[in-house]
Length: 297
Image (cartoon, rainbow, N blue to C red; front, side, top):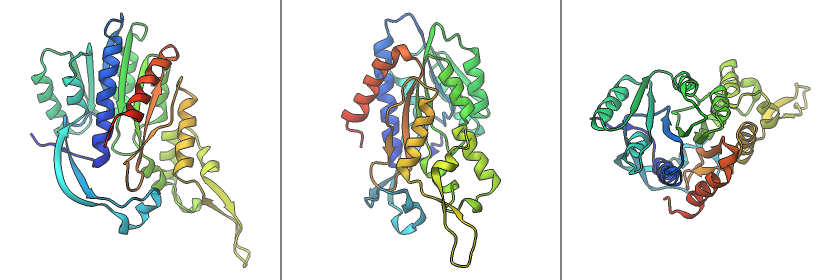
């Protein structure tokens, strides 16, 4: 089996966070009268081959992506369990597992993984993550079901419509790896240089065009009378804050995210969002304990 080549140092952290939360979640709910399911719309192959940096510069701004001088030195490769395999190997079982993968080869590897866990109820879906996840959400009876959903996209594929559907279940705990670096790259320094496709991509992911007035400010033209320019003034904190506010508008609770990786340019924000207001307190307690008190490096 060929491992899925994807990620780096941050990958180990996000997967450990999810593993610890699954363990916490299944332990807390094991005596509750709910059907428990795990949903992974970007499931990969089950294995993850990542590159580990032995030496990284301590840069805390995403501007480092525009300067190749700051690229980390990658020294070795290792294979670790991916999210699908982690969920399947937790001692306390979910009643069902739902894995989505669009790539044909990785989907075939998921089929092999399913065969090795014939004692578990595993549903596989081949196709677009947003479309398949919406279908899964529609099929579940959320009155007697609780779920963890882990959204770990390869880029900016996750659509706001999908997040709204998750929030509307009132029954899901969501971990969402938000691609900060992708948004920053798409949102050019000069707004006028952005093409329609890039603007629409950010609109689909954030569910609004209000980011434009948050991320950009009008700057005075030059001494020759040129028109004022819309220039990006948003930094990482601004993008994170805007995204947290957007998620908080549809979910019951959304705490501050874990920024990844721990060192070097910030590339991602690992958000935790609770859809069920009645369970928000205990869910947040578990997630915050994992983020703040566990050694995740």
